[in-house]
Image (cartoon, rainbow, N blue to C red):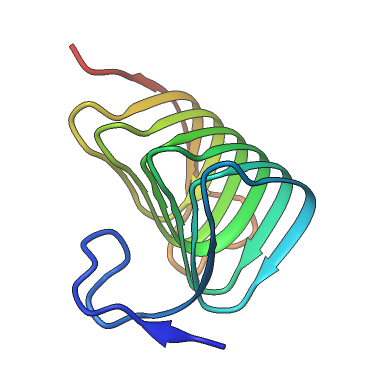
Length: 137
């Protein structure tokens, strides 16, 4: 079952949300998601999403994410494959690899790893590889 939030600045106004994992919840394994989803708990494993995935301030995720739009305010360690964009917000910390046509790191966001910037239609992995380390000063 999906529901709509009125004005949510993290996922977008009026998006249909399918669920969330709250603080205090831990999951190990694969999470398959249809629709916009928020994580504020701990996940170790794979997350596959066809829309927006939000890792909230309290999220601690380790593994691999495949999705369209990924917004990170918590901690992520692993590999991200995004068809749309990856946003690392001011409290977000990402360690690992990002494969995406668009990467946004807000001031205060931290990224330590490798970024593979793919063209919008490039899914073959022949994009430009950029080693990068960003942190707030």
